[in-house]
Image (cartoon, rainbow, N blue to C red):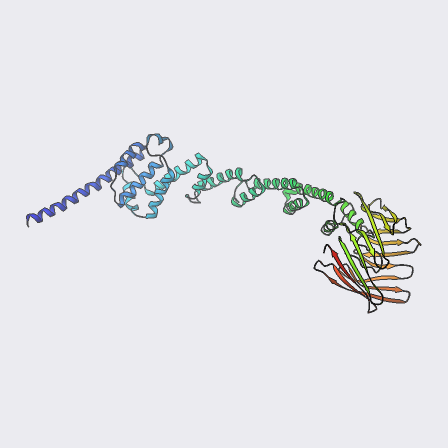
Length: 490
């Protein structure tokens, strides 16, 4: 073997010998680091740790574990170590070791040595405990939220942290009804859910009270009407709703539409003053110009109506009618008689609207009304022209009969069912209203002794379901056509 060959072999051997002591030195240094850690001498551990700079894949795991233990050291040791405590970073280091999955077996073998007696799992649990302890000590919402992302749900600390977070969130979020609802959605298992429910009820009631509208009280009643714990608030809300509605509807500014909407969606009651106002309004002869004759009603018009009547055998004439917001006739013009009439009305909170006067061709007639003492329903209307109208109602306040006497003493009596005229009987004839399409009479028999004539009506409706054309026939033969235009349109 040549000298040159021998020299090469010796060089390789020396290199190997140099590496082995270096690895052994790192291992020995790490043993000292960990032994200092288990003695809680973190200052020495960190000083020793900084001297270990060369590491292979196996020792890197140990370096990360030692760093994690130093970062997650007990809080009272913080001042003696230059590196700041950071259990969150420590947890990240340990989790990354598990993610990489390299060197775990060798690390556990190293950590099991005398004077250390640890394992990777033990270190993870220790750091997790320190992290949990710190979180509860700091008692901050952000840290609780962060902790819940790194510990398992079966860890008892998970439930403790979530409950504490629920307490913190409760104070921050449950300051309004919507905030309480969001809280209950996010923490359905929280022991504070019942308190959140009670506060939601309180906030919703206060919100309805502050808004003070019928819509607000209806919304509250609809939300809580079936909940036993809200019984007293719902009962008060119902009383408040009635008070608000009555204040709005028992008023001279109330509209026919508002009264009609209320009457169609609420239970009829004789004690309810809104129904008194409504019933007394719609039973006035001037409401929608509902005279007891073949003249067709206006279905609650609250506008100007221009009307053209074309007789098959006769002339064509034009009428117009002005109705106010309550559906009461304020002015009319009869083209057949060339006669204009104006009406005036007033209001009182007990009975509602009532007629004051009527002026025709410069002559004014005044009205006086009488009412049933018990029900406050309209009992009779007298006019200085000598006419009188009397009313009879059923036990629910619905009209069942109306009797009209003219200045000559002639009496015409109309009977009603479900708000519609069914018969109209005078000295010489009886009208029988046999069929209706909604509130539009389509078939009327006129009985005079043994003779019966039949009137029929066909209608055309606009988009608002108001009729704009009616064709009237007697015994199958067309007699006249009425066309109407509403301004503003309905």
